[in-house]
Image (cartoon, rainbow, N blue to C red):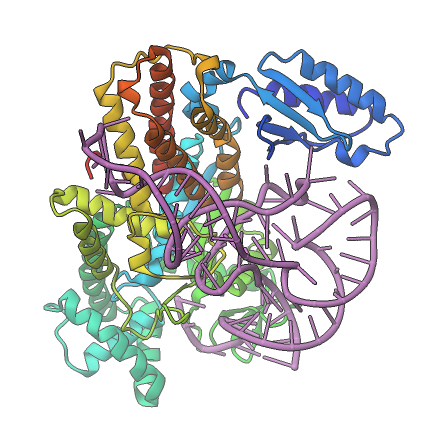
Length: 545
RNA sequence: GCUCUCGUAGCUCAAAUGGAUAGAGCAACAGACUUCUAAUCUGUAGGUUAUAGGUUCGAGUCCUAUCGAGAGCGCCA
């Protein structure tokens, strides 16, 4: 809370006088008259010096000019009424208000597509959440690097190569369409036929040993695949700072294993190496044939990133992989690889209408590009006259907003018809409110330096203004918990309140200039806030609908 | 079998990390358009937060048990 920071500091200092050391939190108040409340004092009802604490607290609040009035309830809840015109400084400088004091250096590891496989529904949440967290962290001034972390190594790749060798398919002429068909075929063959499985395992070992011929095949596959992935990413509005993959750290692994062995951090277990930790299950670091696993490359990736001095490493990955990340983080700590803050930003599955998760590995899943095209039909159904760039933006809005409106940990049902609806908590709804506001503003001659005419603000205006005041709280929540849904929900709330105000009065034809100014000022702040929220979510605002 | 996650309105989801009277959206019902785009708005109804205990000033949130659902569980990623 940018403008309330000094009072929070003073209150914390004051509490120290009574040997109470804690953070004072400004929270949202449910009551009409008051916008914020402080709950820290409730728990000290029976403190022997409670009267002195409250008295000194009241004195501090009274001296703060941004607070118009306040009340202390019988249980020592403290409610604050904010001076609207004083708070306008925040409205006008919201981008400055959300900046953090201590900037962090963060890497966001998300996306994680496999080569040979198109981006599909299973990648949607990682991409959406990752992009949003990227934007949020950028906005507060953190240094952020995104890495798509390609699955371009290991068994799946070995399976494809093996399949192509067995079926004598030309590596030089392979197209993305053929490759995408081969992926599920080779995967099921691997599971069902022992002979094929053996040959794929051999290929995998050769891959790890940098066998020239296999590497040559591999690099052709990778080129074809990356091209296709990049195309889809661009259409969906995603960009990455780094397109590194598992293959980029492969060369670090032999040395890593050797050094771990020397330090006795890993032990031989039936030919495989496991971490010398007392865990159940044991943490397998390499296979018994010496080849590498998911965790092996992930550990090497940590080593590879070490010199960038990241404070925080965020992995935006499906929650079903939490055991893997648990093991990974344990190993990083035990091996002494990096003392940065590692976090698994887990998310739930997207289910179909029957409640079953979309399958990811067996093939037959809907491609993201097809989903995008399908969504475009829904958008065109709303308005046939829209130009193509606008339709694209709106289709992406639908696919982003519907995904980010739900708490990331929750599984949710994917229902495109519902998500592309014009009313309800949808991306279309929030875009529409913003378009209305922008058009209105363009028609007016608002001078932005004006203050509100406080006595002439009506209930609809006040609802919006008070809601604007909550921006920093929701933003902080989204940032601290890596949870974009707070912002999506808040964006809907603002849009809904704006539509309500817009509807209740013909603003530009209002005879009272002061009322008109009030409403235009509110409109202008709404445009700023809505645009900023969309940016945080990875949604691109449109001008026409 | 072991481990983890979850159970909130008919349906889909929230709930500021323990705060005051649990909120939205769909669907349902009743209203408002010669419009700054009704692509909207206004209102009504809908709950013993799975169940039973416990912790404290205060519990959807923490602890225990039971019931129910899902996920994961060394040579896939």
